[in-house]
Image 1 (cartoon, helix red, strand yellow):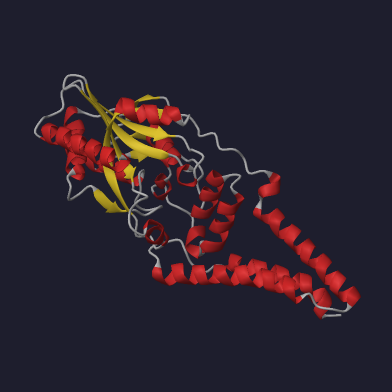
Image 2: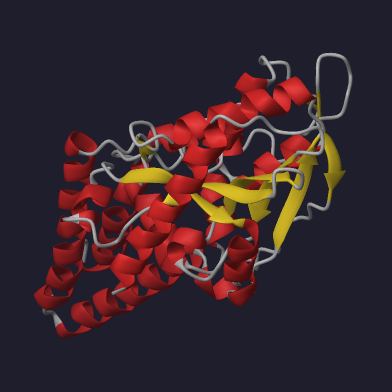
Length: 330
């Protein structure tokens, strides 16, 4: 039933868009960048970006959203792991969009873009073209092609690559440090980032590479100017995301220290009784081997650009070996 309602809603939106294609925006039209704050679900931890087009003369007020995906897609999780998840551009009315985020208590910040009539029309036509059935789907890439990078590229193309921003932000940060900042207290996600991401995740990002994160894009646009010195954002109510700091007890480093002390205590106990606790090593080895298999698979068969072998994969066996040396070197 829900699937039928969704298809009906999308069909109605498509009919509306078809009726708008031939129409031009009026002088009263406004185009804004919407930035949504993070949610509690894993896939909402980094926020979201969308584009609002409002034209009171044409009785038009819609949101273009590049974050539409379907959990019911065949083999969804398998495709997601391999980096073959297809997202698509969706359209919804602004009141409906606002209601959803109000329901989940996620504030939405709006930045009205200071565009000429020609630039608004160019951006509008680009959005309409992107929504055509043959164009609306795209192969999602978490850091290089997502809900934030797509709106930025559309705006940049509409302005003829004339955007300049003095926003500094977290300059010199890497993909890994950025992502760990947003996952905060989610220690299992942080562990996954440390184990699954390879050396590419530790390379410093350029200014534009940082814009895959909605908050970074929001701040970047707030300080952006055009080639003639005009500020790109006319009205701005953007604020910093409130990201809970990582608790001291949820850090990766503390976990390693506790693991080392635990294994050290077992080694001392084994030495006193002169007997090796093979079961303990087996319990540690099995999940580690599983992790190695997963990383190997993703490295060779996944499209995820940041996944790969890194020195952090050696931390667990090295820590384990150091703690067990007290028995081995007796």
